[in-house]
Length: 337
Image (cartoon, rainbow, N blue to C red; front, top):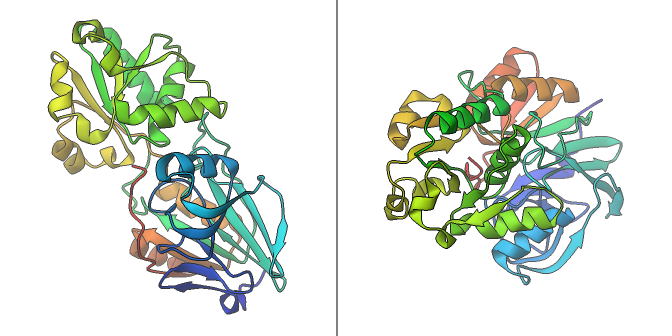
């Protein structure tokens, strides 16, 4: 495949990555007439667009978080379905990041570009697995694009959590986990590991978790923390926003074991900074080896890096003989971690 010519119809602008013939922006940082949204995290899904094309699950997340009127019009695109927009063939394929997350495949003038959004390669029972699409240009994230980042198998980290619960039956375990994707994944992994007791949630995590359940993700017996007395939570598994682990909310739990589920828990300095007792290296992004492997699997001659640790990834891909560059798009953060 040849990457020549893709930049004539797909290029970065101050609003975001723009496909000119189709008149669409992918995950734009500002309100636009027509947007394609890869997933529901707020650094990718913003309100105010005239029309939004996304998976049905991403649309449900956007409506819950941003309101039914977050866009002038929503259009649900089935995974794998190709439609023509301004002569560009557009389809969504799974990204493996969170429920409903998708890569955007664009074909124009005999060339193909794939915009990955955020993605991971590890198995996740709460979302469809990443699908590798051969392409001329691959647009990748770089959240964990440093050689130090090599994520642990998530099931092994959850096994550590459950072992701590067995060793400390008198102590509640407070797990700080991001509310969209990470929280639900940790719950489902715990269920798959055999944990069938009620799991308690901070109020901030309830609505999204209930949405996951309504969309077919079985998470078992989920209960809100406010409905139980603190004494009843001895030995319980509780999930909450990372910021709640050490704030006033957490003081209702006598002598809790504090944990944080994040890819950043690979870094000792981050662990010390968080002050948690049980760091869990569980990430919803690709790690360094997976980023490199994914680029190579696509066969792309040209790689564009949207956000994250782009310098290291661009350097490594160049060392391997690939053409790579940082797009320096604004507005993206590490919200999902």
